[in-house]
Amino acid sequence: RRFLQKNSKKVISSVLKALAKQAANHLPERVCGIFRAGGGALPPCAAKRIMKKNMRHRPRGAREGPFMCDTLGRVVNEGLALFAKNSDRSPNEPQVIEYRPARDHREKELRATYLTIEQAPHTYATLLSRPAWMWGAEMGANEHGVCIGNEAVFTKGRYASAGLTGMDLVRLALERSASAGQAAELIPRLLEQYGQGGDCGYDHSFFYDNAFLILDRREVWLVETAGKKWVRRKVSAGS
Image 1 (tube, rainbow, N blue to C red):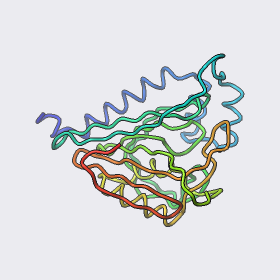
Image 2: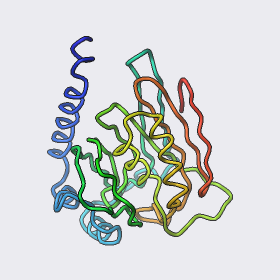
Image 3: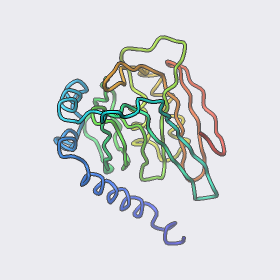
């Protein structure tokens, strides 16, 4: 325990790199090539065309649904927390597991899935699970032990045709937050500045707003959104 407390950043970094390497070795080369070349995601339309051409479709007789998307988080005790998430996205859509090292950035802007926004001077190391055609991630963790997962929420307002996707917000918060509290503050700021929106479906049109479960080793936060409106709450456990 003392060793982990003293060397937590090194241990987390080593584990993230090992997991990413293991995942990459088991991914089809045609999928890995989409995000390995140049270190970034292709534009959504181009990535979709490539994957639809190369990826196998759902096996005959496979179940159409219903599916569930669940995110669970709990702080067990000081320094120990549990995070879990599954995905109910299209079975034809590949998700890639990738490790992104910490970086200092000279460029002033970055291209998310649908928007170009201001880049941060420094981003933290992250382990992400993301749809291969999108910039953002459905779930992930960073070097500080911050974990975030997002859920689709279907609100009564009109969905925007372009904006930051919920997955963009997950990745941005992981890259820029050293604690769950910082992430819970950053997501609403980005939401108010850039808005949320864009088609998030792989093989069908799919628009929605987002909710987020955010945790680190000390606390859990829930953030729910509708357009540019949001609420957040600190909890002892969330789902």
